Length: 525
Image 1: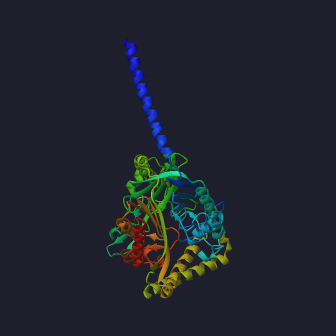
Image 2: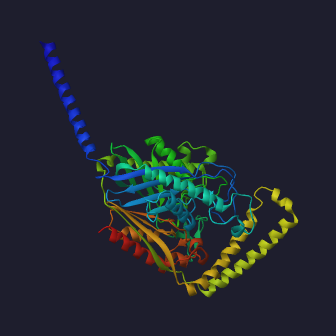
């Protein structure tokens, strides 16, 4: 009897468990049955390798850098979103220094021919701002940029190569759309640091030694928030994530190899944790005055890299240990939020898209600025002509490693000075400059673009006043128009705030903030 009672009890427990399992399966089946293209958004992902197979000029520093191999691939990642009402948007993230108008227009033109049903105006294409990606443009050689032609893949050839690859990736993502859902969350990771230091006299300097008596303070704010968008298939499987941080991808920015910088390490770390099929789309928020380089407490950070088990040769500024450290921090932010995301999936969030070309006030350049820049340009021009003569008289110089560094650096600096006078003349006849702004609403979040290396002050103004629960700002998107510094930075006079670095100044920056907020408010109604 005792054995019989235990058996009956065991059967009763087992029957309850089986019933609950089938009930749960039934509920899941009912839930899944309710999801269809008519009731859910459609999502499509794709990724493509845009690494060239020949040497290129690596853009991001003053001197030219001819690539000496590939450390890791540069990629473009695409996410297509479409609502049941056919409102759509395409997000494209590229491991590039910037997205020039020729790049976005090249992709649009190819898609108009290959995918006519897609509204190509609803494309947001951004750069991660790595300094180890190919020079891309309409020029057939490097002479206009450096004064000399280098033996590298022509910028125009790379432009054709990468826009074709991206257009195919967009088509793949579009044709592969499937019912799915999104969830969003906020994490934190210490990645970006304000890179400007100010002395007691009020002069601002980019980077430099802070261990000096004249050092007063770091110029501006830092934003360690990580805005996250997760995508899911109808079975509740994670398919991808959008990661938005206020930092350019420049931990190893001075190397001579093609690389996606810390986003490559981040992709590896996340796929190790969440699966190799995971799509990862990075975005750089307002970060014109930010970088992953440390301004203080470097010794402590480098010690932590060592404790993490990083090779001692890869510890320090501009080394791979820093990239690995950043990758772990970003991945931790993504995975720490993830447990709450599956229970908060939105299958049919409101999707709306707005695109406007707005006119912003150009930066007013004084005659004093012009005279200073012209004088500096003349000095650089004298040095350039001297270097050019030496090379012509001694062609064996070209046999030396990286022989081109000095002369290309010199040419870039003389051209930089001349540009100030050109802008001074241009603002007389064109006091305002058109730029493209896009605002994409996905449920309770918005994504807002700008084509600048936008200083963080402006980003914080937008985030603080935005009515959205989360605001993803995307700099260097659908255009590339240099730095946009606030007033305090122009007073400090550091690199990114000099007249030669900026087309738009503080007045235009305020106009950008107000216009962006106007579009955000309209989208949230």
